[in-house]
Structure formats: structure tokens, C-alpha cells
Image (cartoon, rainbow, N blue to C red; front, side, top):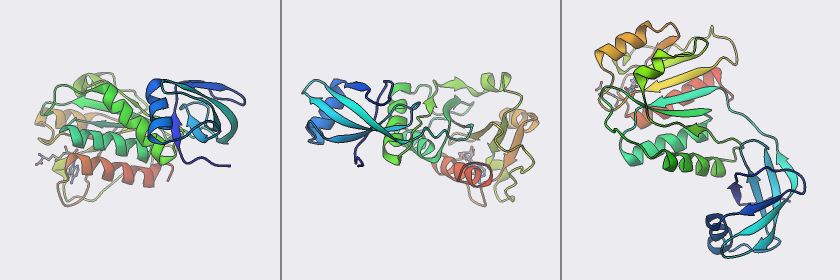
Length: 241
Ligand code: SAM
């Protein structure tokens, strides 16, 4: 038995476990998707894998599902952070959605000197990450952080975490992604804003011991394209693809 609809819930999952639905989930499942009692739905909560569940009660303002069997174990992504400077709303949404699909463990919006936006809607971006996980069959949802200053993040940079610094000043040089790091080592990718990095930021990032400065080819990519390209390259070289 399989289910076409996948839902993320913030509730423990296990054999025989009842899972209450909130108003929005009930509206989606019973109103929009026209499901009713007895229908099957795949549930995941980011911790207990994926479970096949059956609708026990369907109402306008809520409902209850009951977990029947586990259909997937929890599959954690590699320990990879995607750090990016937020750009226009639709493009920022795109970056979060693609990072969740492509296997980022954490998504960290960072404010650089030339970052266009001073504010983000963290809750909205987190909802995009949930939606992406629902659609791509993932059992894990990356946390989307609050906007924080890149300089502060670098001040407390974890010693063991390598950094793939995508520097537009390297355009045209050959890609060199260090193969000498240990398998399973924690990493982060850093993508700059439309205006690129300032000289001071570039200098600091070049001297960070964990930094691996990379080029993403002979053309300057938009930040959203660069995020997808960098994650593809990293996943292929060091990740779980
Ligand atoms: N305003 C910058 C310029 O004209 O040089 C371009 C910034 S680019 C639109 C946004 C971000 O994407 C950059 O900060 C960098 O992180 C990444 N990026 C884009 N193209 C790249 C390339 N060819 N090599 C390395 N990083 C690149």
C-alpha cells in the first residue's frame, strides 16, 4: 500500500500512533485534496522516518490519522550548510526550496556588506523548506536560520567545518574542491549577494583556514543559479549523490 499525498507533521510517529491534524492540514487534505476517512497519507516529522497513515476522522477544522507502518527510515543529509545572502523574494524562496531538495542540512541566510535585503521572513522560508521536503520524498527538513551577519558567523566559525567559498573573483579558473578532507566532514557553502563580496570580506574569507575558494565556471552566475550549481558540485564530489 502506498500514499500519493505526503504531509509533514510536528508530532511523534510510530506504529498505532494517532496524529491530530490542525485546521490548515485538514483543509488541505479533506477540502483541497478531497480525501476522507480510510484514505492513506504518508507522514514524516523529520525524526521518525516516513509512515503510512490512515485517516480515522475527517473534519472541517481538524482530523486524526493513525500510523500503520513505516515506509522509509529517517535519511539524514550530509552535514552541509548552505549560506547565502538573501536577494529578491522569489529568488530567495527558490534558493531555500532547491537547497532543501538537494540535501542541505541547514540553510543560513547571511547579511554581507552588499546584501540587498535587511530582513527575511524566516517562518515563510521554513514553510518553503517543509513543502520542498514533502514534494521530494525527503524524510528530513533543514532548519532555516534567522538572518545573521556573515562577520559574526565567521567570528565563531567551527574549527572542523570546511567552507566552500564561491568567489566571483575566481571566475574562469578551474574548480578545485579539496578531495583531501575526511569523508563525512562538516562543510558549508557560501554564496554572495547580487553585488558580490566586498574586498574586506574577500580578504577575510581567503585567510580563513577552513576556506576552499572555488570558481563556478567562466561566467558570473546569478546567486540562485550559483547556489544550485555549488550544491550540485559539492554533492557530486563529497556528498550523498
Ligand atoms: N556582482 C558580482 C560581480 O559582478 O562580480 C556578481 C555576484 S553573483 C551575481 C552572486 C554570487 O554568486 C557571488 O557572490 C558568488 O558567491 C556566486 N558566483 C556567481 N558566479 C560565480 C563564479 N563564476 N564563480 C564563483 N562564484 C560565483
